[in-house]
Picture 1 (tube, protein in one colour):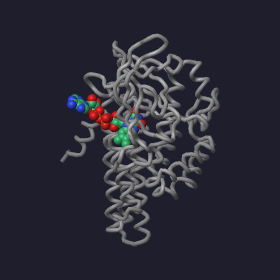
Picture 2 (cartoon, rainbow, N blue to C red):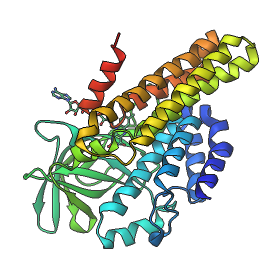
Picture 3 (spheres, helix red, strand yellow):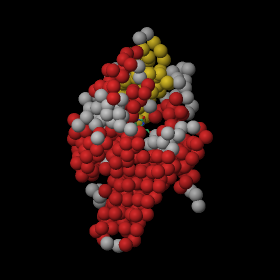
Picture 4 (cartoon, rainbow, N blue to C red):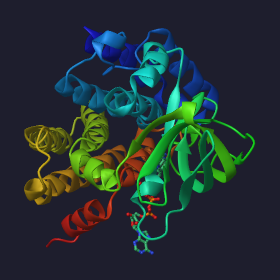
Length: 349
Ligand SMILES: Cc1cc2nc3c(=O)[nH]c(=O)nc-3n(C[C@H](O)[C@H](O)[C@H](O)COP(=O)(O)OP(=O)(O)OC[C@H]3O[C@@H](n4cnc5c(N)ncnc54)[C@H](O)[C@@H]3O)c2cc1C
């Protein structure tokens, strides 16, 4: 039911406006506020906090459909849906009761913890102090300025654990945010960097503390899960080829679309087969699937450009937009093993 409502929302408010959403912050805001109004912002929220707790399979289908409709919109809203899932899985009862009942729309939260993936000296550090933590350093990527009320930061403690807490999404005492970044793709998601100088994180704003190895384990868990965005973007590329095939009538265009849809479906089945498989032993297989999703996404997006000819270069043409979106989905939630697997696939003979 909720998956139907979410896909109907995408069909009506996102897919037809994908170009505007990609090029205008205002258009992004209109779609985003409509999604909030329809209460679709917390699709995996547990029933006890308001639901709709859609199944894992339905959620991955939704991820594909939203990326197929608009990569930028997919990227913006997924930050909040991720925050919902993290809070539901890890936060204290007090935080869950305060946040989750409002997260279907009224209360919005982004995320800023990719810095935990970086090796060597942490770039964002926390030390315990009276009543909370003092945070110092940098958060290199936080998407959603102007859209989210707060963001969930991950900051490293001296013993290597990471404290996660709610931060204001804007300048505040001890926090300075950059202007939204100029980006090749998904610029309307308004991604910023934050600099922290003795920012006081009140212990009442702490969501949870994770052990030293959490980021690595979480990334290992997410290897295939994030691949569904690439599948959605690949479908968007194949859709363009299909549309052009109908207009231009060449058999080879239809054959290309058919081949791409078949490969994307096979790749998707591979991701789904590993959906509940988190063991270290299967990581190489799962990395292969993620790399495949990235590879077929890029080829499909490129096929959309080639099939569309010179018109693909028009700023308003979907083919160049989908190709740009594929750049972000090639590196979002990237780890060193994912980078290696992707490059190995791209250079195989
Ligand atoms: C448009 C955009 C928006 C984003 N929004 C968000 C967001 O809202 N929230 C969020 O949490 N993340 C966000 N990200 C981050 C995204 O998930 C990261 O791209 C991803 O985590 C990879 O990190 P990185 O790009 O900073 O690469 P890096 O961290 O620079 O490199 C990737 C890996 O290489 C390793 N590495 C880098 N340099 C060296 C070196 N010199 N020696 C050894 N190893 C090295 C790092 O340790 C790391 O594991 C966003 C990214 C983009 C592109």
